[in-house]
Image (cartoon, rainbow, N blue to C red; front, side, top):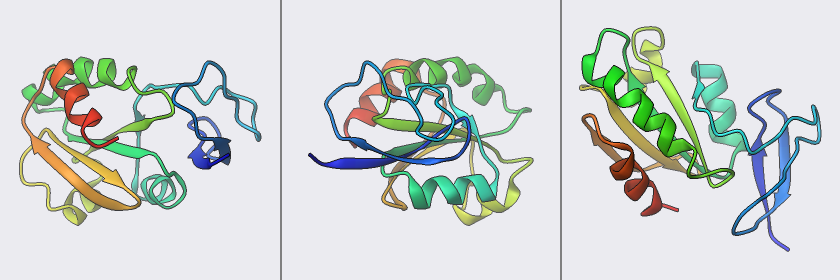
Amino acid sequence: MSKINIVCTHCGGVNAIPLKDSYTKASCGHCKASLLDTKPLSLNPETFDKLMLNDERLIIADFWAPWCGPCRSMAPAFEEASRSFPLKAQFVKINTEEQQTLAGRFSIRSIPTIIAFKNNRIVDQISGALPASQIIAWVKKHL
């Protein structure tokens, strides 16, 4: 059976789990927390790089800022969309005010910008506030 590496959102441990169409239960082999947690993670450059290098899922990154009205209005939709992809995609949030090096690394010029990464490479990106249904449809294209 094929396996996929997943980084635990609780302890950062890397877990090799069987690749399935869906999961009803999956626990971290290090801290025993559920791997099915879908809440988007806030990342800094170090945690971003660890995730990109060790997690084989699709990574969906929302580049945003607290002063940005469209970013704040899209936040609930982004979180809602994340709940549709347990162990299929990891949703992350990157505050461009606090993490300027990450915003610069990906040449973020407008926010909100969502980037899909697979195998440490950008596969697509979109800018502007989107409803959950559009985020979900966009993510499904890349799974």
